[in-house]
Length: 239
Image (cartoon, rainbow, N blue to C red; front, side, top):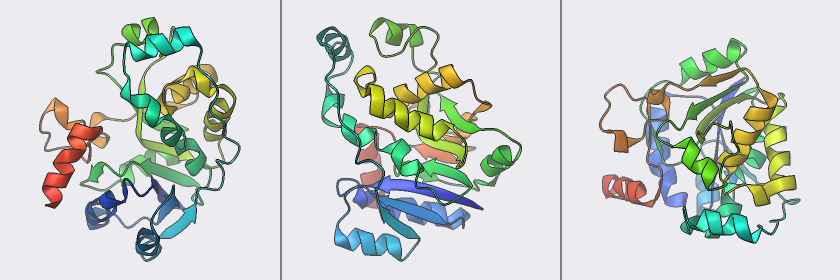
């Protein structure tokens, strides 16, 4: 069985109707909405369209103190992330709740414009994980700021395909539980796991996680409006 998982809290629930309208126009896979702290109204809305479950697997998480030297390096690169790190770390724990043997995670700021069937086909062929490489990231610069370890590649977790019963998502969650002080976001913990586990990984074609900052792309199947400034474009679409 194939299906989609998304996660949301009250701060992001305004995205739900926009996301659903685009997703459901071209896809009919069942959806699990993981409740990161939704309003009662949003919970009802999600339950009318799919499965709505509270995030039940995050209770063991404790944010570990960050070494002062590492914090200074991170602050020299990005400062706004510290207030939302805990929320970002929830993603792999939500994925552990997937009821679907083959699962796609899709961020709510992703505009789905076409069929996702090709991604499930890759998983059927034995690919363990689908994820897009952050080609725009200067990985050497990230290494110098203590964000990536030498040899690691940078990945974007806005769209992730995986096997529910495979070991990767559990390893990702465990890495965050045990060593979250080493990572700015969930994506950096994922980079470490992928480096160490060397799974059968397929880098997603850019059309399945397209950054609009690269310019218009009529072939894009998923456009990812990542970050505050791009999310304002979604607000403009809605209003």
